[in-house]
Length: 174
Image (cartoon, rainbow, N blue to C red; front, top):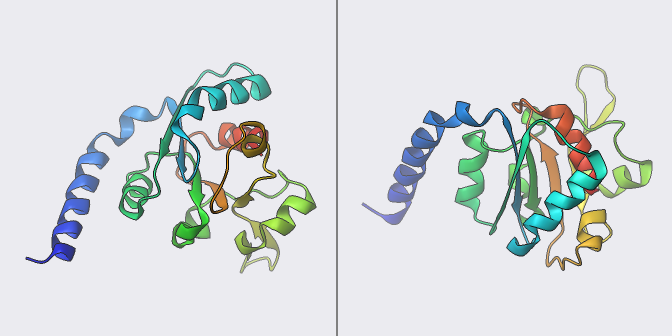
């Protein structure tokens, strides 16, 4: 058996195992970073979120991971995350069908910088924003002095049980 079929079998096996534990994390809001965010910034991100939105009932889990296509695929497919920040080199994961519209959360300037993530609604003909670009001018990147080799994009999974809180967090970090 070649490498490709073994990788597919590994990913499918991991998806099955991940799906079995999926329902246990509904009380936790999970934020995944796949990009240049250093792992030692997790505590600072928690503090920034807490300072901006105050105490919340849900536990906030932050995972900072390297940009690995297979890992991103597994996390999204297993519905592990609510809010995602992904390196723009992995734009293949942008699919507006599974994302929450972010209209009204950001300024026109922010929306202009996120033009690749604006999609026309086929029913209404109106444009909708489904993700935002994350770059060196983004609040948390700037304040935590993070250097990005590639810009990122952020979105909220439509299957999240924490959509409103995810919007508040995204807005606070942006």
